[in-house]
Length: 332
Image: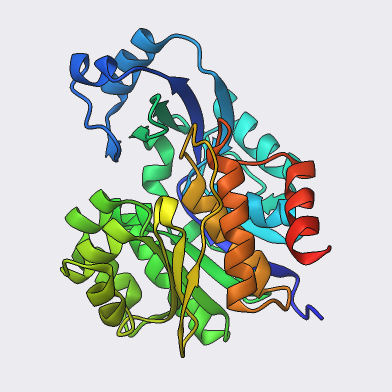
């Protein structure tokens, strides 16, 4: 039985996702690195939007937001600490977040910086490329943390993208320390290979003596550990995480539950859009382990949920789709 109000307290960049379907020529024409997340300034952001036209989808997003929304859709209770501007996109963001069952900060901040946005570009090979203008979430800081809500949570979930901002990184470090003070478990996601490649020291500062749960994909695992194989990387990750999940794309996932390794089989699907797959995996997995299920059961749930995500456009499922996943695997 849950003794705390929230299963997960998440912190991350609040970004309105604008999703487009493109062919690969757009990347070469506009000098965009395919398959990764790249931070861009406001001028570059407006330039790309001018060439892209109307998005296929618009939704409140950011890696951690997608994860806590997933947990909420499965039936968990989550809170998301974030920073948005007092503008049209900021109001949309908070409204969309709450409509998806997630509690959040009660205010909009007035100022010169607009709400952050992420241009998500999906190609026919189901790959996703992101160009992100952080906007006001660049200034996400310790001010956005709420200690009373944090200590009333089972887990804190820290988004790896926060390492790109000095104030956000400081907030992530403070968040982890508060969690440890109040015996709240700590979870971290590496978020993107480029974050690990260029901000390794920042991740080390957040991780400190270690986290309770780490989420990463195989590229991030090998980049962080500087190993050439997943088998080598997984041994190194034991030094920084009590438990961890390495997602392996079409090959499923590898879970370390603190004692043994668990191989999670993939569900074969026709992949259309990989955007949000890792975020969904984390959300479904966190739902599983906070609702009495084993790591193996949570892994199966997360694998099935992620397979549903990549077979459609956008980073999240519909409510009825999450219920179908629960019924299929857990009989809930």
